[in-house]
Length: 238
Image (cartoon, helix red, strand yellow):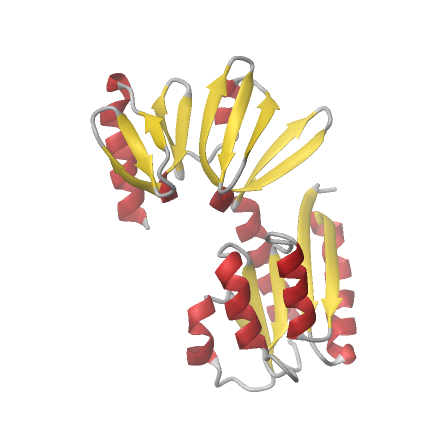
């Protein structure tokens, strides 16, 4: 059994569709393992959850036509605090694509929901989210960090210091082992003890790499040429 941990929000003001989606998600546990979901009857309730916790869900399945704040407005507000979640819209009409473009949804599914299309969309969403995480297995449990939260990492003694968007955490692990967990198409070494998330590189000079949050990360002379190649490759690929 897979050990994927995925958090899903279902938001629809019609219990019929909520129950149908819950039934379908239950079948995904056999393939992907640990999947949890919460259900919401309106956008207001879902947004309360986003105000209480940072990025509480990996995947949001949301109906467009709801009373009060509609699905598009809800998704746009979610995007302000969470650029990484996969958003799947449900709709009885197929003419909302332009209106929804701003929040970059993964897919539109029209009601009644085709089971084959739903399953294909969910496989894509789950696999996309798995690629957006650093998964750290330790004796005391599993830690999952979104790449969008990580600015840079530093090896310090027997620990790795992970510098996040607005905090830092320390884990007991050799820096070389931690590097093996990273997607080096997203990250690059700047020094024997430092690696940066290239998404947040603002500029670099002869001695350091400046990130978008103002942090200056050491850039060693021996790493400079390779870092420049990696960064240019990353920017070209985006």
